[in-house]
Amino acid sequence: MPFMRLLLLVSMSFLMPLKIQADTEAKPVIMPTPWSVADGATINFDVLRGGSPFGSHKLNFSSDGAGGVTVTTDVDLKVKIGPITAYRYELDSIEQWSDGRLVALNSRTNSNGKKKRVDVRRVGSGLDVDATGFEGIVDAAMIPSSHWNLLQMYGDQMLSTETGEVLDINVEQLGREIVVVGGAALEATRYRLSSELAVDLWYDDQSRWVKMLFEARGQSIEYILNELY
Image (cartoon, rainbow, N blue to C red):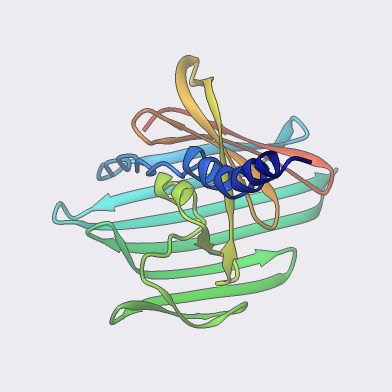
């Protein structure tokens, strides 16, 4: 091979990676505006399992008008075979927020008789977690896995409201879709949040959580919002 051609190829081998790196440089992530919590708002989902009634998932919000927000979650799911309850899942939690940051969380879960708890409080620049699955200090910016806060889709970790564990997550934005709520159609953005399982969540243009879908134990679990909040 002529010397000049060899020199050209060697030079290109050093230049090409620089060009590829420049072309694929990550663009800044534009954070969405979170939903503006309204005092007395309620998120009320009917939950279906394989298309059949499975229970309910409700969240209630109260605001003090000065940046303080309390979120109460009540999840009640059950599978009945005739008069017998074959499976039951219950989760009750209370989140306390101040100026958009979590300051306390207390939850209790009963999964078919197996009980778990999570107690979180802000200490200095972190969150002190005392829970079934984890004990220690975590990042103060951690968002719990209650899903109502769209900013959860823009992080790489979340705090499990069931066990207190810090879960690594990967989020994909799957595009725009139409979601029907109370007989009315609205546009929403679909996200896929992958951690211990893959969960699809829809948020409308006001950052309201309006739908959820995932698979558990071979069954499709679908959240249908009763009415807009």
